[in-house]
Image (cartoon, rainbow, N blue to C red; front, side, top):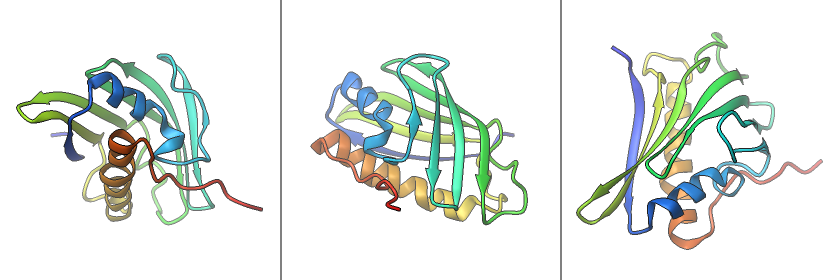
Length: 148
């Protein structure tokens, strides 16, 4: 059975507003992201110091679901550099009685992975704080651009 990391929150925004915020990754994840998330097949690169870098491709984009496929990944703190390879990052917008539930799932991020504790903590902060704030207030808390 496929294992995954999943978290969620509920907001009163429209699915379109939520999807637009999710796709605006430089404003909730990292100002270091390069590339595009405008159309299916678009590729972007995430970079955080010398600790983590990855490349993702947008594979699905609707007001109900957004999904990215990890095609390259590097962590400076794990032995197995393939832990994120071909995993998927999925956002689902699900109507509930008190708003829209935004469910984030990193499909294939398994608890036995060496990166799991660090990754699940980081995802929780990015999703439940930064993305949530971007959706609800218009301002996220992304990693700032590195200064040289």
